[in-house]
Every structure is written in structure tokens, then in C-alpha cells.
Image (cartoon, rainbow, N blue to C red; front, side, top):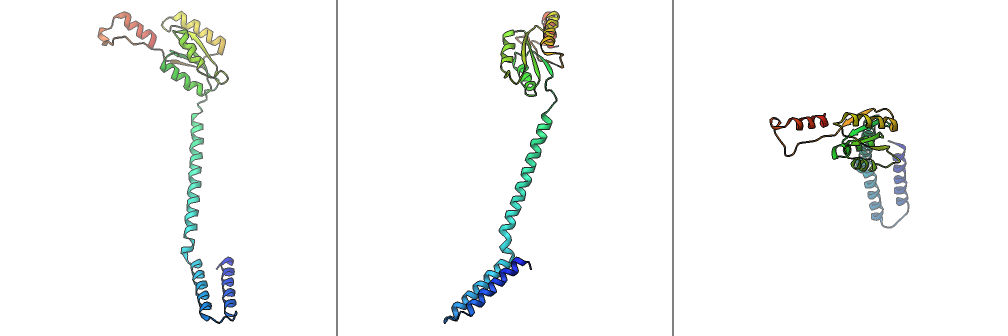
Length: 198
């Protein structure tokens, strides 16, 4: 028996003694008090008294475990999402389109410096301007990727302004409309698709 329980039992015994020695005329009152004290003592000692405390302790432990698990997941997410692309120079061809713009946003989130290449300078500028200048260094360059001399001039401009190119994303693409079977394509249409997409 622990010291706290012993002291509680001693207090109950003293209270009982006090009630008996009080000299009250009604002995039934004294007996009722004694019975109540004994019942209370029995309840305090019984396992049922500790059930709510056990539930509370289990709940606290589960909450702590859950918090630890969440912290671990967040840390792991942050570590896995650091791809080491900060300050890398990324060239995105077709950067003015939907697919190229999505690639550019992904690299911008990693802190890369971007060169947005597109056949339309206005579209390239619109994509480059969509990033906050204080967080992402992005430039717009016009180039038709099917023309070698334009590509060479664009890359020279990028190297001059951002430094050596680390990553090239070829998101430029074209499709023949209306769609045709490969056997129905004209040689010029085939060359156009291959020159831009590859």
C-alpha cells in the first residue's frame, strides 16, 4: 500500500473515531457516517476508481504518438521535396504553353533560375512575369526550336544572362490538325512535327 493511500485511510479512521466520540444522541447518524466512509474508502481502493485516469493516460499517449507521426511525415516530406535544384539554370522550351508553364512552376518552386523559351516572345514574357521577381530569376527568350541558328542564339543569350545551362526541358510540341494517320502525313508535316518535338 502506497503512502498516499495509507494517509487517506488514516484520515478516514480519524474521522470515524471523531464521529464515535462526539457523543451524539443519535447513534444511527454515526453508523450512517461510518458506512459512508467505509464505502468511499472501498471505492477509492477499487479498480473502478482508476478507470477514467487510465483512459485519460491512454488518450494522451495516443495523441503524443499521433503528433510524433505527423512531425515525422512533415520532415520526410520536406527532405524528399528538396531535389537540390536551387540556383540551377533550367531552360524550358515551349515555356509559354500550358505544359511548359507547368514545368517552369515546378522548377521555380525548387528555387531554380529559369529561361523560358517560346516561339512567341509575348507568351514567354507572360510565363516569366508570373513568378515573383524577388524569389525566382526568370527570363523570356524567343526562339523557334526547329531552326538551329535561333536555338544557338537563344542558348548564347541564356548563358550570358544566367550562366551555364544545367537542365533542358523540351516541352515544345506541335500536332497536325485535323489529326491524320501516320501513313497520310505529308513529308513537310512529318518534318515539322519531328523538328519541333524532338
